[in-house]
Length: 307
Image (tube, rainbow, N blue to C red):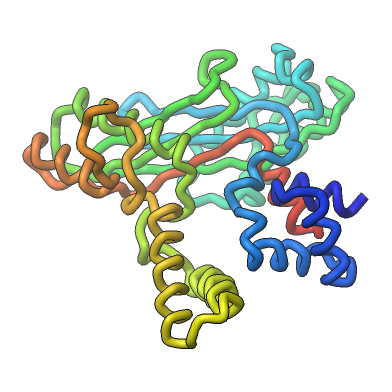
């Protein structure tokens, strides 16, 4: 039923979901907004929804200057453990690593692999995935294929819950632009940052990266929440501003509190951690970009977009 779907989507109690649907006339999008305005739903809970199975592949080139991450979905974990399925995931990831960095997912699906599960000659990536469907008897989808590259510095990877070499359930890439030459120290910094990204789930690298539309949408929700408190307009404005600032701290990588630290370590932001590393390395270090792919997340987002 719609109430159950809404509960799975937002993590809100069933009774609140039923009320949201009633007040929204059964419109699921409006119901989600209703729950968020009432403080009953959080965007971070969307990851808890039922998701597709499959594998996330992550690879780095020999020079450490470029990395790729892909997500190949199956319907069950049984197929994800199939060596034939794993082989295709690795081949697609390696092919993404050697393809142009800025290539879109749709363009990548049209690019030609040397062979496919059922083809001994060149076959489009998208068609190779279709051949896998015929091979394993389950619906398979390539839902993510991204790459990061630096001219100076390193791209570092992290795989959470690995299931085989270069394959796991969560994959992270982080690109560090720097002229520092201590590869081991850069690798160590990159791994810690990638582990933080896996746990912290940032949406943007820095505040300037937040699209105006996203900023306006969040501000609108916080303003409506503040207005419903009954406070005077000037106080409500300050409340909304405070909540917006807190939201930025939660979703912007540089402003997040760094999670990979000892219990007795001073609490630092990611930006402060990078600055400290730069001082030790003797050269500026910048996070040029990151990519975080969690198994099933793209499928959940697609389901949300279809609502």
